[in-house]
Image (cartoon, rainbow, N blue to C red; front, side):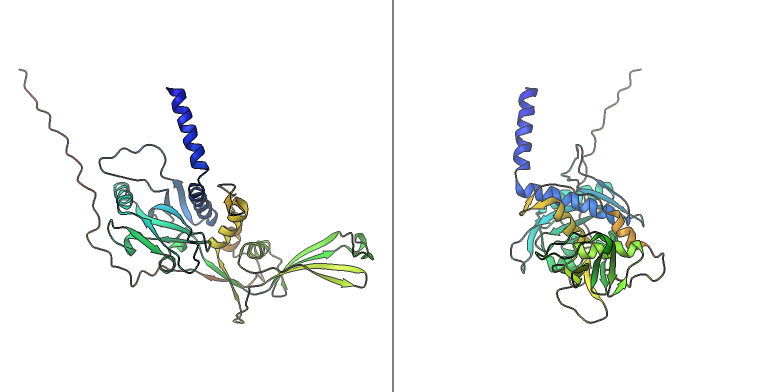
Length: 339
C-alpha cells in the first residue's frame, strides 16, 4: 500500500507539473515573494498555505503572510491572470465559496485579506483589498483598470520612476590593444573603459549606475542596435542608447514601475517561447537598495511616483462584515458525586 500510494503521488505531481496553468500559478507566487523581498520595504513575508489545516468551518489559507513596517498584518492570495485580448483585461478571480474560506481564515488569524494579481498580458502587478471592491462573500470579478486604480503595491515598496533620457552605455576602446579596421570590416577590440551617461551626464555613483542599468535592461525603453564611433581606420567606441519609444519633452521621461521591471527580469529568467522553464529567479535586493540611498554628490536626477489606492466609486464596504459561523459548543460533561 505505501508503494502504491507513492506511485499515485508521483503520477499526480507529474501531471500537475505538466499543466501550463498550474506552472504559471506557481511562477506568479514565487515572483511575488521574490519581488516583495527585493523591494525590502516589509518586516517579513512568509508562505502561509503550508501544512495541514483543521477547522470547524471552511477555511483556506492564502499564499503569503506579510507584516508591514507599521505592524499591519496582511494575508495575500496571489493569482496569475492571462487574457489574450490586451484591451479587455477582465476575469473572475474568486468564486464565493473560495472567497468565504479565505475570509474565514483571515478573520480567525487576525489578518487583512489582500489579493495580488499578476496581469501577465501586460506584466503588471496589482494588490487590492477585495472587501473594498465587492464586500462580503460574493464572487469577485476584476477588471485590470479598476485594479490599477485601487492598487496598494506602494505599501510593499513599489513606485514608478522618471528620469532624463537618453541613457547611454559607452564602451571606449583601448587604442594600444585594438587593431585597425580591416578591409573585411573585422577588428580585434579591447575595451579600455565602460561608462554610463544620463542625458549626456556621466554617472559616477555606483547606485546611479545600478538604476540606469536596470532601466536600460528591464523597462519599456528601447535600445536600438549599437552604434560605432570611428575615426579613419580606428574604432574609438561602441555606444548603446536607450530611450522611451516617444519622448514627452517635459524634462523627464517615465520609465515604469519597479514591479513591472522586476516582472520583465523574471520573465527573462523563467520563460522561453511562452513556456515556463523555471519557477524562481534570484532576488535582486541591490536594485532597490540603490533607489533608497541618498548618499553622494551630483547624483542623477530621479523622479519617484508613489501611487496611492483610490477606492472612490466602488461599492462601499458593508459595516457588518462577514462573520465566521459560530463554532459548535462542546458538550457538557455530567458529573456525579461518588461519596
